[in-house]
Image 1 (cartoon, rainbow, N blue to C red):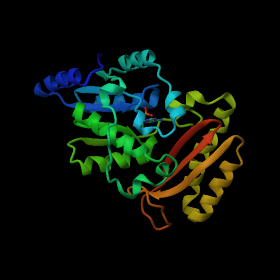
Image 2: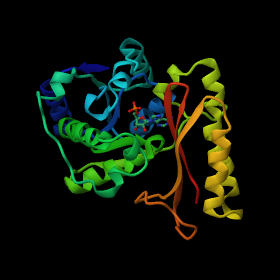
Image 3: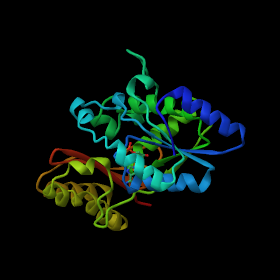
Image 4: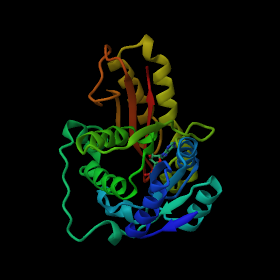
Amino acid sequence: MKIFTTTREVQDYLADLRNNGKTTGFVATMGALHRGHLSLIAQAKQHNNVVICSIFVNPTQFNDPSDLEKYPRPIEKDTQMLIDAGCDILFNPPVNEMYAAHEHWHLQLGEIEHLLEGKFRPGHYQGVTQVVYKLFNIIKPDAAYFGQKDYQQFMVISKLVVLMHLPVKLVMCPILREDDGLAMSSRNIHLTAEDRQHSLVLSKTLFRIRDEFDANNIPALLDEAAAFINAETGVSLEYFEFADSETLQPANQNTKNIVALVAARVGKTRLIDNILIN
Ligand code: AMP
């Protein structure tokens, strides 16, 4: 696997590959890799000649400085995992390679920016679009692979691609879960043994509510989900919502494609999860 830390080097290398007719698939990550990330690499490998993974803990998408500081950065282990997964290129730039001092960024993302995650993490999607725009510009991938795990992020990045006319195909990959249902996440490392048990209420609630969806109305299901999660020790619910799967506007019973999304603090760790309902 080739490893690059500077924009110029990775750009030159990729330009050569493109000139030789190679197609490129890109997976953007913040590292602390797990099997969820590796499933994106596997999909990218299936459909492209060359797979590029970035590891960059993007400061502009963190609204909580302590969250940024304690974000896990096991770069040696990550590098080995990428080699084992058959990734071709790792792009792992330092912060000053990606950002000039006092850079400004604002994209008119519309309402989707302020819903759900946006309400609890103000500015988050500005930071996400800022870094993904830069990464797309540097890597110029034919296709980019993102997880359903960050459902709203996928919709926001789709909007970025439309607004900026970016020639990249976006692919959403399914959520990988632990055997007991917990969605894999780099943040799961922070869960204590007790948190880990309590965290199961999130996926359990999503599955239960999906199974009950046809037989119940949305307000009743929302009440049930909130009651179920709030009853779990150590879990503090931020939101549980049904939304239109494209716009992420709140869904009503007649909405066709619905996604249920949840965010909660489990102990000190903030977790998100979601499920497609119909
Ligand atoms: P992150 O490193 O958390 O920024 O995630 C990088 C990419 O991996 C994003 O597209 C995530 O949606 C995706 N991802 C994270 N967790 C999972 C998972 N459990 N299953 C599938 N994809 C995931």
